Image (cartoon, rainbow, N blue to C red; front, side, top):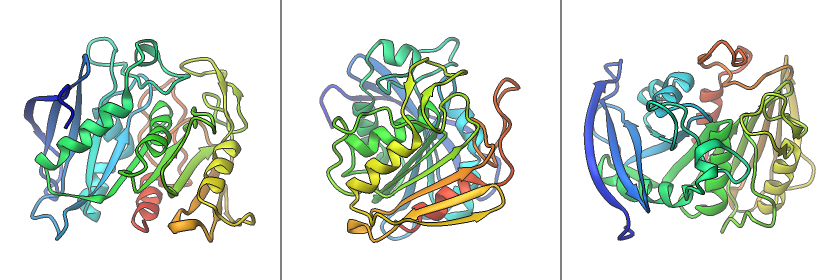
Length: 298
């Protein structure tokens, strides 16, 4: 671990509300000049040989680790399917809320203070084995909105430690010449066509947390298709409002899949609506189940 990173606290929180999961653990780190934290929900009982798989869930801009747990319901899925759900906490905010991530073009305090998010995630991954037995080859990342930007970012900067990613209603803010993954990274993208925060086709978002020229979903998919050296011709299937497009025959299993929800807004499909001013989640898809289905293949 880098000498500038010091573990300063470990506190047990209230027990997670299911008999199939252990209590939530909060860890606090100092990364550079910033105190950072993350929360861990592990299944109850002994880990499997080689340790538990891990799903990092990055909250959206203005959210919190606890909010991401509620919104995604990922801990309940982890308890049922056998993986550890980890909720990194953004920085800044007011009264412990309104946290953000520095994704370059977004968002808030974290962007304005040039917070080194890659260093934080690397420190978290260094610290996590002290909390729970994990399979370091099966660490995955997902997140919504500003948190989806973080999922893309760690694939660009920590590809050697991230097995696959699944941004939800997110944007790949890094330009193609800035993102330099060291290997093919399997990518699942979930996005709605009626997203007014981070528009599916790009351009300014009418309801964006940080107004900027949003890069399109198509640009992100094309980057990862090329990076993962997938076949040019995808396989598309449609069921109701949901269209799945898969790019196959990729190098080293670097599959790319796009799930498009026609009329879907800026939300976690199948999850909880965290505030009335936010778009209602689509009921046509359980995003968390889709994400684990994808991750479990990689």
